Image (cartoon, rainbow, N blue to C red; front, side, top):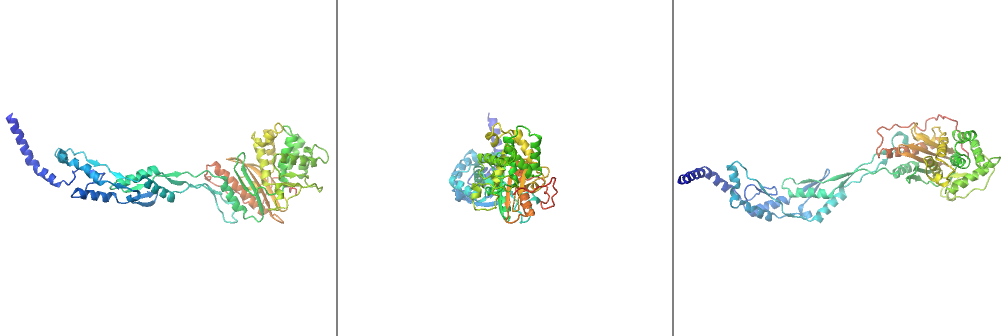
Length: 512
């Protein structure tokens, strides 16, 4: 036993001789706080506890750089009531240097087993409302709203047919306050990483709205030296673009569309006979007023003079459908006069297009008729509801097929690709032109009804230009809708509408 004690003493003596200088040096090197202890990642600096606390306070009160994307913002801790309680942190660190804890780092060196470092967590106070307010102000200044697709502003005189008329929308940026607050707090709590990148959420651009189409068309029609009345609607929806759609205009040959509707409603059951089919074909393919008058005669019950009754019956049907501004009291190409009808449209003297007293419509009225026929061909809509048993989807499709015979690559036709599916009917007199058509785009069918008036004489080049531009803008808009707000990868410009026209069938001037 004595021998064991003696040997132990010798070992201790040797250890003391070997380690004594190192232990003494370690003892002299220790500061007010033990080695291996940090204050929220900060190595204590100072000869006294008071100096350590002061230095730590200075570090944590330094401003932090906060980045909103590439924008650098400076945040001072005092701005949001951020204060570090360094005295409490120092007090929490002191016990780690007392007793055995003082020598733990030294023993770790001796036995090559480094002591586990100790980090005192940050003790702080923060005004959450001030931080939220600071982030809110940053968001108010730097958040960017998502921009919907928008129309291309072309220089006056540049045709819309030269380019795709819409730009893709632009995404926006919004600050995400909760995650951003966490990043700001992390920067304030770090003695070295005093920067924070705010969390930003990309907001996708909204879906295109038909308001953008209307803005584009307002800018275009404002350059026209006369009156413009426009109605555009996606079939079966409430979305429409309109510019003064209730101006009274001469009905011209566009009234042949409701004439076909009334013929099918009152006289045709299923498929028209050969004679009726011939009248429909000539009425639309050749824009024949003679054939149209024979259709009116058939509507009126047949016999000489029945065309007058047919015109009145068509008018009664239209007015019963709520189209108070559309009427026909006199057949085409006749000198016999009847009493003119007074309508809300021709009673409004804001515009005066010198409309035919006996055959009138508006862009909206005639556009609605074509929309209703299109809906009917799909098995629904106003006409099937208003005339149960008198019209069928197949009959309405036949109407569209006849209307589509007006295929001469003029007016609205020139604004859409040559291979597009459409059915339209145009009409013109000396000082006014009109065209109404349904076009099948990738987004579904839509109706364009455009009437223009210029006092004295309407030049064909002027009419062709605005008709093509309006039609091209509408086609591009619905293409944009079908593409989820993105322009097509490749846009092929359409032919110049002012180029010479090669008609596929004779063009007969519309009735006045």
